[in-house]
Length: 162
Image 1 (cartoon, rainbow, N blue to C red):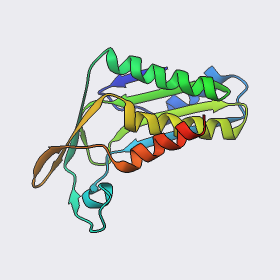
Image 2: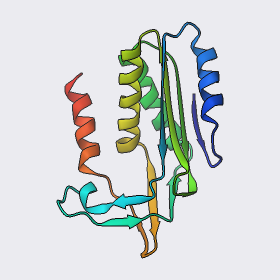
Image 3: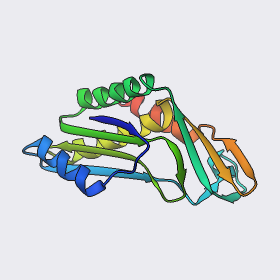
Image 4: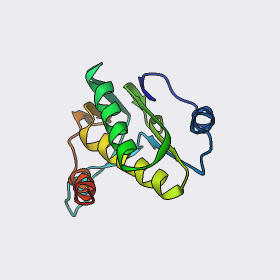
């Protein structure tokens, strides 16, 4: 199931619902992403010197309809690669404060490795290919967040393993 929403989510409730949906699961993997309090700008861009900035808020924008279709496609790809019993993706949009929950990826399978691999695959593709635009606010102003080389590297790893 896919949700794009402004409201926060309850991790415990989501895991309990996934457990019911999965039936006879042997493994459930959850990943919860948070808005960072400090953004290491230079390291994220592949530089050697670090420029840390405090994050006041992060605003996420998306195209309704297009974004849900993309997230469903990512989930479908994961289900085609691994034996999953259930999948849950929640991505929040709107203005979020530092340490707010931003994303949930949960996978259930009979065996742990399928659940781990699928969750990482989904998260890597969400980070790189999902149509979300992020504007970060710091005490010095705000700016749109660019993609990172490490995100592209993560996608390349999955493409090599096909």
